[in-house]
Image (tube, rainbow, N blue to C red; front, side, top):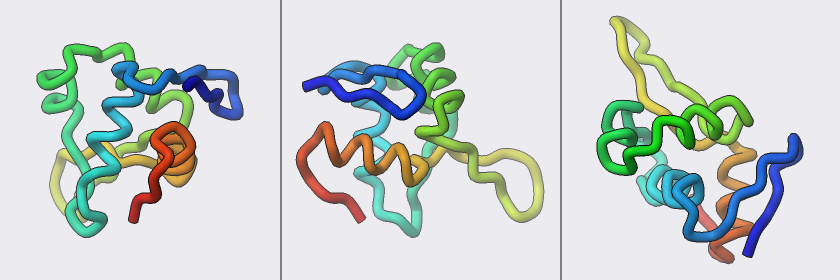
Length: 90
């Protein structure tokens, strides 16, 4: 299955972009998020992470105090994942 983001990015089920969204959406909401470094280490796809961020499907959530942050799925990213996966997420 393939679906398109509103801006034209096509994502296929089981593509690296889908797997990144899946990884982020599987984390329980209170602790949801993974650093860009860890995503790149796991998927070896910095371009896919950058494209997802550029398309507004993932975004950085920064800490209240201090440096650093984690990438989380946006509402658009969660909707796209749900459409591709055929399952609902929290």
